[in-house]
Length: 118
Image 1 (cartoon, rainbow, N blue to C red):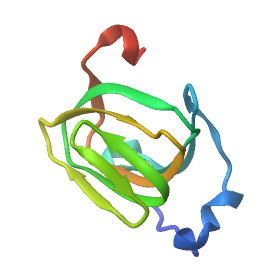
Image 2 (image 1 turned 90 degrees about the horizontal axis):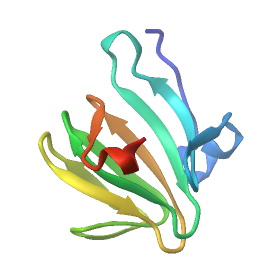
Image 3 (image 1 turned 60 degrees about the vertical axis):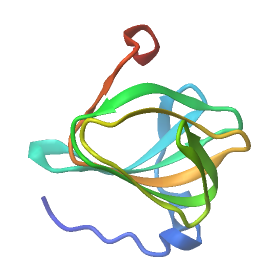
């Protein structure tokens, strides 16, 4: 994979990147789609009230909250928070007022509630 440079991400530099729907109320901006065994890296934007259903991590997930506050069953993570979700951990994710996060997955997640995960 060729190296890519993304400047100014902490100052909203991600806003000009192409985006697409990810889940209801969540938009994704792909930085690396995890092809050929490489990790997946993206910017996720949660609209107010958006949520991702309960899922299990098969690899390390790393989240840096760029704007707003992201929440899960373990707490609330305001702007500037760095969160590590280790392999085997489970959670659902939401944002009451909306947020933007930088996210890195070593491996894909597995949705625990199959109906919600589809």
